[in-house]
Length: 272
Image 1 (cartoon, rainbow, N blue to C red):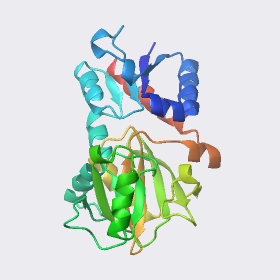
Image 2 (tube, one colour):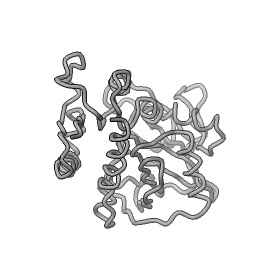
Image 3 (cartoon, rainbow, N blue to C red):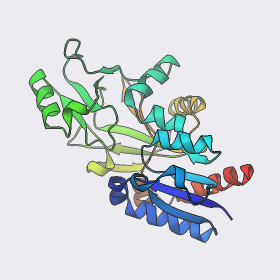
């Protein structure tokens, strides 16, 4: 029998009850012993048993790294979590490798990009802390209104010439599974969770080659690679480590969790 933990923090679990419940049901049908744990309540020095695997659905790279030192298979790895959950780290990592990315830098009022540009928190998710900035006054306003503004790290990013459109590519075991095009007619952000529309998207050869190159540098168990478009070329925007699945289940017949669990099961059994 496979023994595994599904780890969330409280805010993410509150927002993702369907995912957590569906994941638990699918594991139960496979005969797994899966426990749901809250990261805030875990004491890793007092684990009841050492699990075969941990499915990390929150941003805890240090916890992931510690579990890995104990020999636990963590999906996604601590290394992937560290890079992908820091947008500046993602930018620098892939730019050094020659992957096309939009110009980004840590916020410094002395060296701003030309307006308009995009302002983001370095560790934000879901588009809720992403703003289109048209002036320095707007920039100051957005930062003041953010939650805990002085403790957050911010980056600024050059605005792509096709705002309101991106493509999320779902990856399992470093294999491209499906892609969804997200668009918004009213917002430069195309996030499905913010009211954007989504539809199945067939990657062309150039887009597929770019994603294949990206995932060749970073071992992704289950993630979303987000492409934006500038000057008619695909460009890497972000990689979602704790990727959502609502678009796929709402708009397609693809059961991405079954695909992921098939892959995870092989990985776990290979190590037992």
